[in-house]
Every structure is written in structure tokens, then in C-alpha cells.
Length: 241
Image (cartoon, rainbow, N blue to C red; front, side):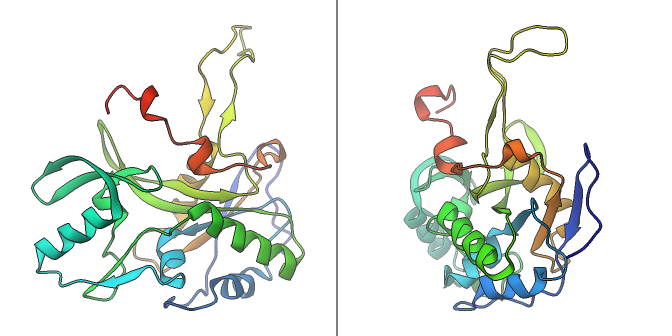
């Protein structure tokens, strides 16, 4: 195990290198365990990109990149609901409840003619990885499956959590007091999304680093939780749907 721990009050983000290209059917858990064996520590949070999870789980389909109608049909098949369309961009709600572009279907970092679909159950994927790593490496850690999403009203992309295991994805501060003694009434912090975004800074989009360790996450953030259950806003609370 590495001795380069984060000191109290700071986070350290460590890229996980040496992970080969993943193909459908590969044992991603074993591959991650090999890559992490000499660097992982108790209390780390492992962030793994959705792309390698989807590949390992066989969530890869062939589609002619010039056949826009075929791609549109695929988006509709993966969507629970279509919210908006503008040209070739379709904003959808997936079966998971994620609101994103083109049902999360992505051709980046894929072989030509192939696209990746979102995992069927990202929380379950995170649990499977965490259970394997705990058993194989003997460490206590949390796992986040991340993906890149756009954001309403802001330009640019940011990584967010699609699934997690061993982590409370939402830190509810309602009822606590701020530094001036004011009681917080609406403050909930999406810590799983913040950790995913931090991890992406060392993974990049073309560097072939599909995983990172975030070290120094407060232990009080660890526990049970689900991205779909805890982070997704119910439509009844949404002013824009």
C-alpha cells in the first residue's frame, strides 16, 4: 500500500494507470484489483468511468455513424421520455431517471461504428466492484461510477456520479448551523458528484486513464446510499419538467 496519504483537511486525487482497453466480457473487477494493488488505501474512494463499466458489461452496440435515423431509434429505445429536441441533439430521461443528452449513448473513445450505452444499474455495478476489491485487496473503500454530463444554463461538461457503493451520495445539512449560527434550511451537498468531478481532472478525455482514487474524503460521508434514490430529483419537485 502507498504511504502517500492525504493529510487531514485535504483531498488527494491519484490516477490509476495501467488499465488496458476494456472489451465486452472482460473481468473489470480483476483488472482494477491488479491496477490498485500497490496504491489503494483504506478510506479511498475509487471513481471508475461509465465507459469501461459499460464495455465490460457488454453494453456496446454497433451503429452506422452515417445513419442518423438508426442512431435516433437507438436513443429512443434507451429513453424513458424525450424532453427536448434540437437538430441532432435530443434531451431525454433514461430508464434510470437521468436527464441527459441522447440517453447517455456515447461514441467517444469507442471503435468506429460502436457506441456505449449506460449500464443497466450503475449502483449495482459500483457494488459489484466494491465487493470484489474488498474481498481481493482487504481494503475498505467506496466506489463511484461516473459519466460526463452537460448542465442547464452553464457551458461546459462535468463528471457526475451515475452509481455508488459505500458512500452517502447526498450530504444533508438541513437543520445544522452555518458559521454565523444561521440554521440551514435547504442545503444538501451532492458529494458523490463533487468527488466524481474532482477525479475527472486527472483522468481527462483522451489520456486512457479510466479510474482514479480520491483520498481524504471524510469518513462521515461513507455509508449506504444510491444515486438513483438519493440524488435524482423527483419530477414533482422539478420546476422545468
